[in-house]
Amino acid sequence: MPRTTQNPKDGSFNFSIDPALKTAFTRATEAEDKPASQVLRDFMRAYVARRERRDFLAQAHQQSLAVAERARDPESDEARSLAELDSLLDEDPFRDEWTA
Image (cartoon, one colour):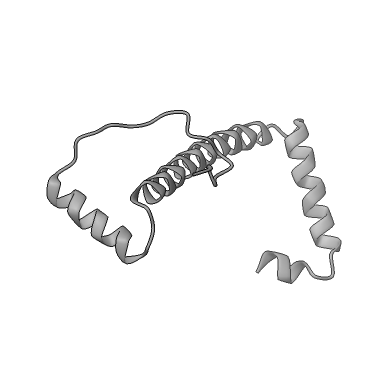
């Protein structure tokens, strides 16, 4: 039977699992008419995506703290940029919508 997926399988996992959990998982996937292996791959993709998002958010937080620290210096580019944004918001007829 030809492979129907565009992602060829390059590896596999072999692991032990509690027999009751395996039975329950198999029943759940069969009830949804999905192969257990596909559901496991979906779980793995979701886990990796959550991890990448957490890493991204942590890095963004660190960067925002660094920018905030630099903005404390009134002569910094960051402080000048924030002052410019403030003046633009003051000129904006829709500023109440932006700051609400």
